[in-house]
Image 1 (cartoon, rainbow, N blue to C red):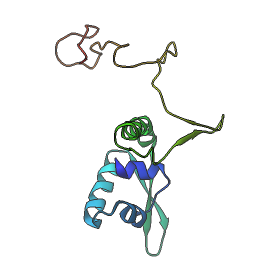
Image 2: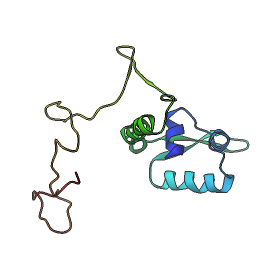
Image 3: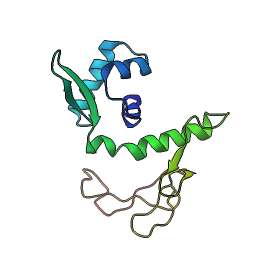
Image 4: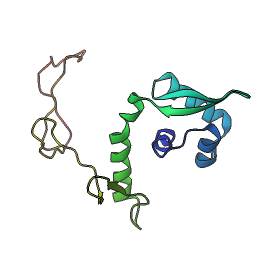
Length: 137
């Protein structure tokens, strides 16, 4: 997830990832290959001689933004006693903001108490699709 986070921050080249993350080249190579293989990053040549590549987020990778943002906000609340190291500014209004979860149908706020889970069409075991499941309190 740290590689994906850095990709959102504009890091694209192997040496930049390696420098920022401080991990060995062989581990970074393995992780980048896994992210490319999973369709989260694209490996795109930016130089011919010698051939060099950069890594860009795919649509699938960009869809991880809410996941990373939620994890960052959790860390800001529970593990950043001096305040958040990074803040988001909503460009249209110019204000520092936090991302909230809202219902895609009515726009209302969502938390674990305001939803119930039901088995979906891809459920492979009981309960049957449409049957309620229990969420932890």
